[in-house]
Every structure is written in structure tokens, then in C-alpha cells.
Length: 91
Image 1 (cartoon, rainbow, N blue to C red):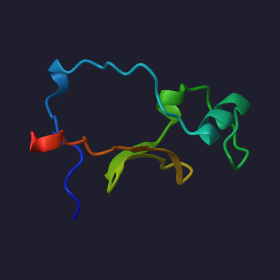
Image 2: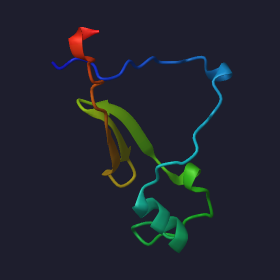
Image 3: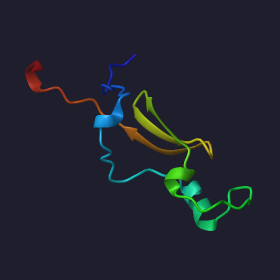
Image 4: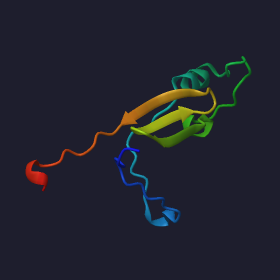
């Protein structure tokens, strides 16, 4: 197994962690359904925000992170992390 590329710490008490997200990832198919007001089966969708409609899963892959749409069972994006370059001389 390759060395870890990132140290992930689970935070269960999020009362002191503010949301600092500036841009969100959304599934293009979900956004299209919201604009049209109908899901992929043609059923009407109650007006709702993209945040509330989305069913995303975010997880760690062998090379970074993946954002997955559980509603449509498709990839939204992958984020590849590169190992930090080691300085010359091993320092």
C-alpha cells in the first residue's frame, strides 16, 4: 500500500468548525432535473434547493478524493492529491 498522501482527522464535535466552503460540487444531472422541475422518470419535483436535493458521497480513494452522486450513481469529480516533493538532501 502506498504511503498516505493526506492525514485525515474525523471531527465529530463540529460546533467549533465553521463552514468555509466557497464553491460546491453538484451533479449536472441533478441540477438539470431541478431546472426542469422533473426527475429522470419525468415525475414532478417539489421546488427545493440543490443542497437539499443532492445525495452526494465524498470519500478517499487511493489517489485522493472522489465526489459521487448517489441519486444517479455517477461520478461528479475526482480530486487527485500529489505527494509533497521531498527537499534535496532529505530535509
